[in-house]
Amino acid sequence: EVQLVESGGGLVQAGGSLRLSCAASGFTFDDYAIGWFRQAPGKEREGVSCISSSDGSTYYADSVKGRFTIASDNAKNTVYLQMNSLKPEDTAVYYCAANFWIATLSWYEYDYWGQGTQVTVST
Image (cartoon, rainbow, N blue to C red; front, side, top):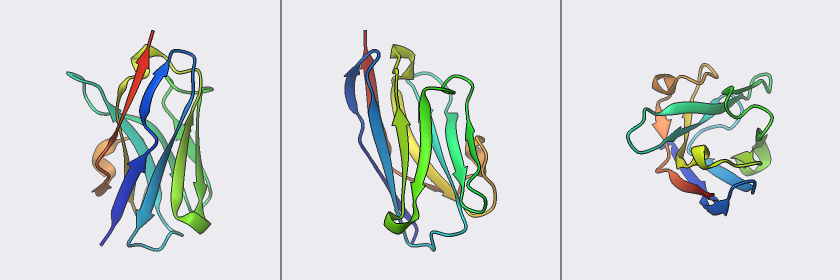
């Protein structure tokens, strides 16, 4: 059974940093795509970043480019999202998701989802 567990969310002041973790289990961590998504109250879910295991390609939403970095530690079956220079508009529930065929920021392409972790950025 595929399971994804996010951690690392919390409350941080604007300009601060957080690192989210997505611990994966139940599948071979060598041919996958992991994406990070977020959803703020009253807004649609949006893709933040994703990574492909096949070639290490990474993708970012324009809103987070230069501030967020996605990375994978295959030995730990964990994908990280380092978030720097956080802004109040980054406040949302952050989810990680997995699929086994394409790295994309389109949330509907993902089959497996974690429970989410809250990130709140104060002014």
